[in-house]
Image (tube, rainbow, N blue to C red; front, side, top):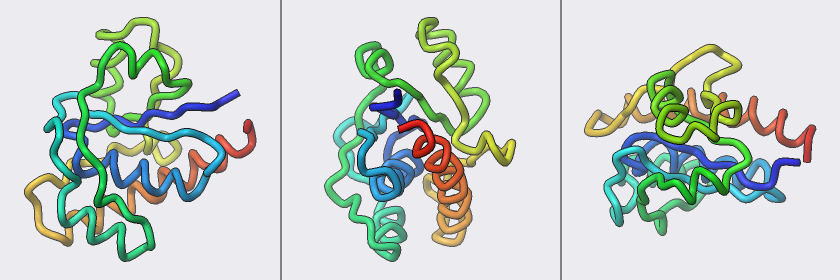
Length: 145
C-alpha cells in the first residue's frame, strides 16, 4: 500500500513543490512531500512557480525547501524524480531505495527540465510536463490506494 510519496528535484523550489501541490489535490488520501538533492534550504518556492500554481487553484506559497536526507528517503514508499541522473544518484546514495525510485515523467519516457532562473514561458512548459506526470502517477496511485 502506498501511504507516502516523495517528489525530488535539485533545489526544491520549482519542480518538486509544483508536483507536490498537484499531487495533494489529486490524491488527498496519500501523504506527499518534496525535497531537493541540493536544496536551497529554507527558501520559498520560486515566485513564478507560486503564480502558476495559484492559477490552477493550488497554493504553494508556504513551501520551504529542504534537503533530501536518509530519513526522508527511507520514509517514502515511492520517490519520484525529474530525470535519469537524479534516479541514478538517489539509487547510489540510498541503495535501499532501489526499486522505489521512478521518474515523474516515466509514462511519457520524459525528463522534466529545470526551469530555475528561466522566463515564465519555460515555467509554463515545465508545469505542463509536471501536470502530465502527476496525472499519470495519480491514476496508478489511486488504483493501489
